[in-house]
Length: 332
Image (tube, rainbow, N blue to C red; front, top):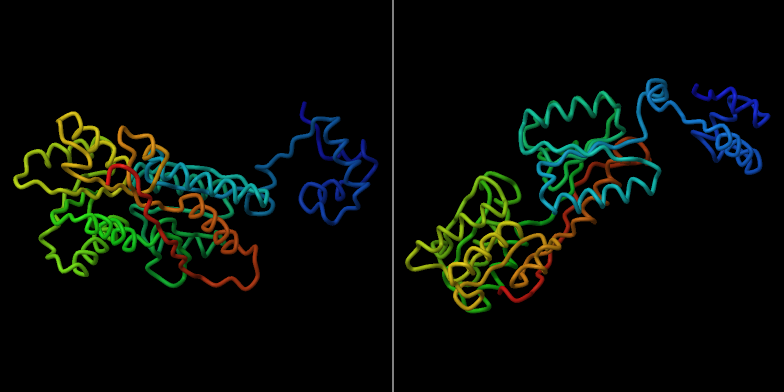
């Protein structure tokens, strides 16, 4: 049989209201009384009915996080930053994987709404503005993660991907390359499109025509997509001497496939990735890449969503850009 809050109160010799304050507003209870209540909770094995509490107060002690691909270590690291920041203020995190599917994204959102999460962090793939606005109208904090908010009534945190593309291709230009390939996911995505713009900006600044860069677009940013990119490169004549990939998974897939085909990296073709996940340094040839501050991304977004949910006075919607940096290793 479950222990009730009344039994805890009797054991500690306090009122039910005092036990409630210890559980929800501990700063209002004297230290000695708080210690007595906590000892009674421990002795009796009391576990709070969180579902009932949520129904009373209208929101939970959790945040919702929806990402498009939990297989991608970039989002794993972002989630770690979210969890660390949430734990620092006593909140938990419910992680959902939309698998880049608008239908799965909507179902995950419905689940989190039913759980009355305090705030939502989302890298959206199919959500409409009016849907997010409805959630905000119900008091849920909403922050876009790794996307730019198209309106001024919502916060967002993202890396400056145009800068990332610029510094990647500028590095390759500095090494003397003049023929480039950009391997990415669909160019209608915010991140891939931004990196592409940055690459073209670097070419323009160096006086190289945009035709110096060929686009090798894949359906997703994955190791298998990188292998497909390598197969395409092997068929090209003349072949680009430098490859910039939209993430490290794609770069590692291309790197290994090219090495198996007898292509020398970086002598025959230089490769630059993007993200700087742990795999990049462990590749057969350690990968030169553009580092995204992934955990910082999650941490800053969590701070914003807590503000959005009304935890901080004077909150203003804002977009926070984070700067990437080049990490030079052996592949370029």
